[in-house]
Image 1 (cartoon, rainbow, N blue to C red):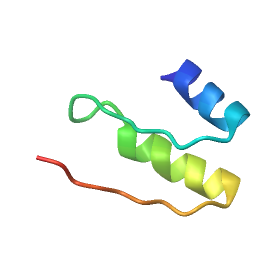
Image 2 (image 1 turned 180 degrees about the vertical axis):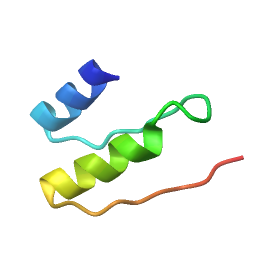
Image 3 (image 1 turned 30 degrees about the horizontal axis):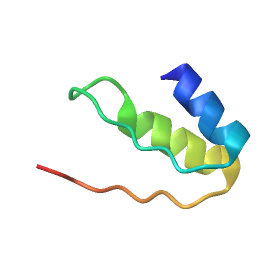
Length: 46
């Protein structure tokens, strides 16, 4: 996940986080949005 976050920030591209529940996807998104001053867009997909 760290490499994906690094590349997304370096290339200034959106990042789609997928994975099992409880691994920290939402927290990573919250921190990145706060840190970059961006907007957090959270989609629930079932």
